Length: 330
Image 1 (tube, rainbow, N blue to C red):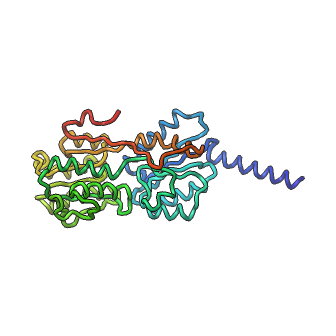
Image 2 (tube, rainbow, N blue to C red):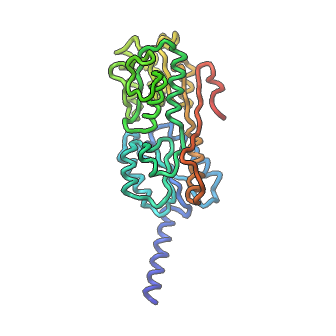
Image 3 (spheres, rainbow, N blue to C red):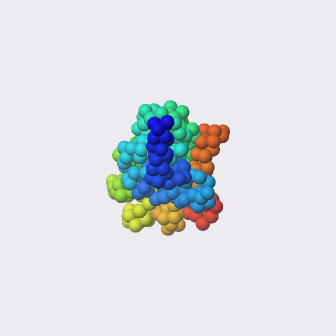
């Protein structure tokens, strides 16, 4: 009897310590690629709005990630730590390195629902998550290309700026862009198909580093003065407005005359300012705030065993210089 009482007290103490350490609410974790990227801060704002509206739900939305978007191993470690926390009851992950994250999930065999947000696992690893909430990234690439073809119907030379080489969402956008420009499926590099050729040295990979993205643009413009189009498959360079302004200053005459076209991803406020200032011609935007706001509800549905679609798309906003004042979904 004494042993049973001692065991019960120990278990009660452990429960009390867990509640003290992590709070009484059950945690719904959102892990992004890096806290240094302002795109992900919009996901955080959505998460915090959900918290404000659901304060008495018994759940809380936790937004976290590595300090740097370049820290793939750090993101994996954060996910592993969260999977071992007793208060975490579901997790949404934006994997920077999809294969690396898949390896962790295979090894960990999580007992809680795991979903992806913003970026997905590869098709081969999709069974490791319950659902994906975010952008139709292939369609986003298609939209990039459709707008570029309107700007440059005769084709020309192009440079694609990508992020992490193993980021499935960016690779899907690149595939949609190349397929649509070329008119063929499965083009790995444009070499005249559809009138478009990728220049030597491209694509360039930013590894999600904003300063590197701007330097790559500047170097490309200098090395290829006759370039027809530069495509930011993600918005990295534009997340540093002053640096981006400095880079585009060197080609403003070409941008105004549309001799050089810039098509870019995302529609954060500084990016829309750049569009209105003529520093890009098209911005195809995702809806990160909606992702962060909807993710906790989806996680609760998974916890409760409700039917959730394997893919939940959040839509796109297509903005040109002519529609910049009205193109963002309300």
